[in-house]
Length: 410
Image (cartoon, helix red, strand yellow):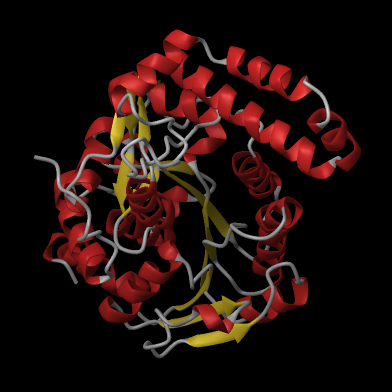
């Protein structure tokens, strides 16, 4: 256990030791790290609801009770929760159809809540997200900000899950706490770790307006510390609490650290307007190609006429020449930004497009404040970004995620 948090965890020993704890999502990034810390730092019985045993490699080395079950099956969830003191609900829909992912986030939370009320569970710690605050801008945000539907499946279903918990009238002395973490990074992080490395290795990442937007990041062990504090502090009952690092950093610094890990540059600075124009062009091309693939009659008619030329010109007009020249100037005049071999035979990396929602997210200078967890929980981040990324780099290297065969930036 890292020395930064050893003292913090020791303070919690007498409050956590002896408890029986159920974790949903225990085979994932956050749930997996929670299990590691619980089983190496505390004397607790840990039970994990597992839907697919092919995903248990990381946690199978610990003496834990792995219960086969589906979070969408109320009886499976009740059976897993029976006899537990604390439940950490970390599961969320990250695969399958849109409908299934939505059901996992909403119905899964409903099943967990019902199971906790029908058994002897005393504390439910529900892991949500700061995305429930919608599209934020250049402002400071705390827990008093309104919750807003933003149109995204993940954010909106998490918002509905929170509403289920807030509207419930817990029984059997059950108390609930909702934690809203920001961008969680560290070893095994999928979205803000593995995916970032893959993006940088396989394409060029646009940094909107020079990457000056704010990245509110929290290291995984700081989040786990907050989860444990939320499990034992009675003053947190019924509260929603934002969990983040001490201060935001810029997206340029965030991606820059991963570039440094890889040893080469793979980001380009793009004004917001150019990023929107580029994305519109890429998405229009995708829509046209999908239409042509799915409608054989239309495809045949277009290919037999000169209409195909008109279609190409229409798509090209979506992105102004000036915007395209700006992007080409960033990545080299001999590339078409599609990954097609350039004139010298070398394959250029494509520019990753972004949705309108992602562009708004990466340009925002939102600062998510953590005054509330400091006051209620005694939470204090122990890892600044540099410290957290040093550990992340060691893990990424050992996991063979860092490209060694690509040219380094001079």
